[in-house]
Image 1: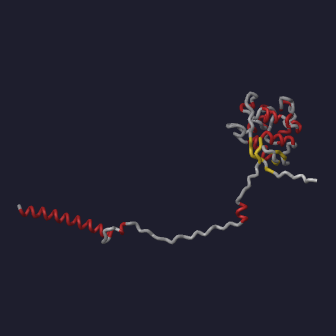
Image 2 (image 1 turned 90 degrees about the vertical axis):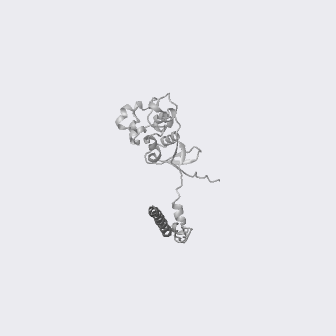
Length: 218
């Protein structure tokens, strides 16, 4: 009986000794012979602090990176009126005044045509004017073809271009033109320019601001 106890105790003591030895081996391999276990901490690689050299920019580089905003804030109807009154040219620039009365200059291609082409411009969800007023739908769109100036001029002689019998440009008289009726009187209102709809005053940034020429004092 005593031999059996000795065997059991010996086995337990041997097992505990193996466990302690194994834990000690793991600790020593990870932390070394120290209680602070510094070796287990991640190694921090020290590097010298780099010196940042300020990037140099020449005056020419600075100036080339600045884009001056020189557009004019203007009511779209006033700009179209100025274009018509100036002769409705497709290539020549025309003069107009912005909302503050400052002189500006624009062109048909850059400033007038987009008003007839762009979607959701005159009111949310609106399709571009030329979607209906084009050569394919001339007979169904009051004879107004707004795709080009030439097309507008061809339609200017139509009696149905305006309820008052005037042509699209009104012979250069803005208030007698068909465009005046649509742009100002009806304000490009929704649903086929319904007379019952509230006219819309569209403010856009267009053209370029020009300095007024000072009149010399005599």
